[in-house]
Length: 492
Image 1 (cartoon, rainbow, N blue to C red):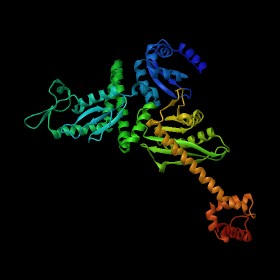
Image 2: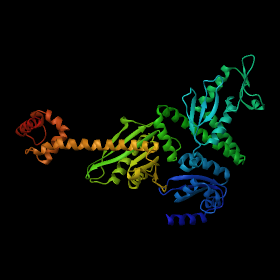
Image 3: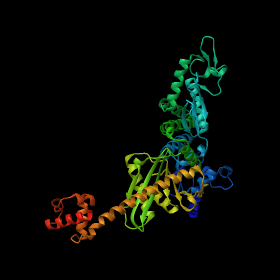
Image 4: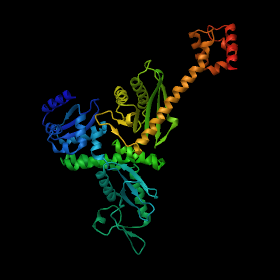
């Protein structure tokens, strides 16, 4: 690592002083941050100067700098190109730290109080069973507030700061100040007409905003071409926030209504401890099981909204090698699971839990590296003191035994352990039953395998007639009858 830092400083000294975009990468070559710069050399070097106040003042930036093992750049002709390229690369790579710096704990919901005569759009942090519609959770709180402000202008809706007045003719005056002039729609309106505005705005929050996104991007381009970079960046950031808003709204409304109070608390706590953008709606956990190096198997259990989804459980026999190696076993099954999902274009879970410590976690990460696929959040739960282990340089975490987040992890881990042990026991039980053929002297090892492969199981063999048994190559009528009689006695 020290040698890499030396190489990075050497690289920085040779950087040009023109405009461009820089990409910071971790030890696996994954892009973790994308930034633009008017002066590449000055900007990039600022991260690696210990005296820089903005690095020391923000722990997340300091943590990111510690993870950087490689930097690459794209030079541009001017700041306009840098601005546009930065947005494109962020969309392409989805670097974790581009969102982590603004996400933190600023998650908000948009609450629409439909039970009121004139519903308002408000910000809140907790969902209640009060008849309102909730949209979110949204990360970038500042952008969300800007979004609502823009929505008020576009749709003529009420936010929390309004005091509408009912007029004598039954209509409502929404605003009693100069703001009314800049909002869409008439300031004096009926309950029914205002309801149509609310429906439009709700449709937008549900994701029907492509046309507006196109408008924002056109404005961004316009300001960029006019060399008004700050205004261009505003519209770019707003468009990015809106894109995320649409995506996260769909996922939120689909998943969370099924979560009970206890599970919600556990998942919410995990999002806090693991610094996730939202509570992990889908968790998958892996465990390896064997008996003295034999019958090596693995399990994968899946929890959705904090509850076990047993139809999605998977169990694995280790195929790539023989013997007992937990690390290689973990690497194989993780690679098989997510290689298949990736090829099928299916979504990964929000959180992967590995039953084990740093070695098992490292093996799981190697599987993703071999697939050349970025993993979702991945942690290990080591049995020593129930320690949470990370695949990067973050310190291990030991939670209080009563912590609801830890209990959620333990529930998932224990289920994976149970499922793996059950599969292991089933295989051993099957092998014990089938070993009865070892006592039949008329069959050697090769023909025992042929017999079991032909019928599939001992139970199917017991049901077979002598005529069916002698269909197997190398078994004549006499041997077939003897085996049939032997199995009848064994069954009694």
